[in-house]
Length: 167
Ligand code: S3P
Image 1 (cartoon, rainbow, N blue to C red):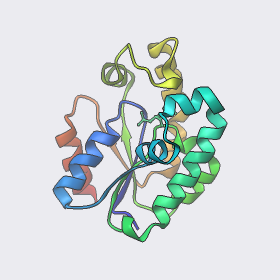
Image 2 (cartoon, protein in one colour; image 1 turned 135 degrees about the horizontal axis):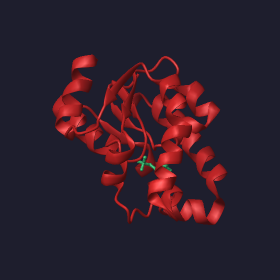
Image 3 (tube, protein in one colour; image 1 turned 30 degrees about the vertical axis):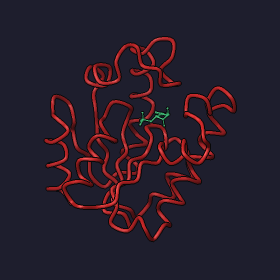
């Protein structure tokens, strides 16, 4: 079982905090988005454009299952993409794992992703898309999380220290 699985919206700092925790704990780091891009040989934004979101979610479901089943991921810090919790199969797969929800509010999320973000689901209007996604997904993060850590106005090091304290 991984030491921790980080979920939360784009801009919550999942990848940054995961890298910090892995370094501090001397634990393996597994970033599901990175693993999908490596396996597919293309960027996530290209997967969305070429094959659509439903196909990406299926790849993501398989990648999450592969990481959670991988003996090499024992004790690892695992970062999921922000929308992984949308998929019912992925949510079911997370049951029983030490899932931490890194919560972020609207202002900090927009500040961190930047108004020029190229993330596929923010294209068009970063502010209105971020607001909608935060509202739609909050109940799903709550559903899978064992712990919740607020990241607003906190540095990645402060968030990592709080995760360490909780586990
Ligand atoms: C997504 C978040 C991204 C990536 C993809 C979809 C989402 O990951 O998986 O662009 O639906 O919120 P990050 O949360 O690491 O940016």
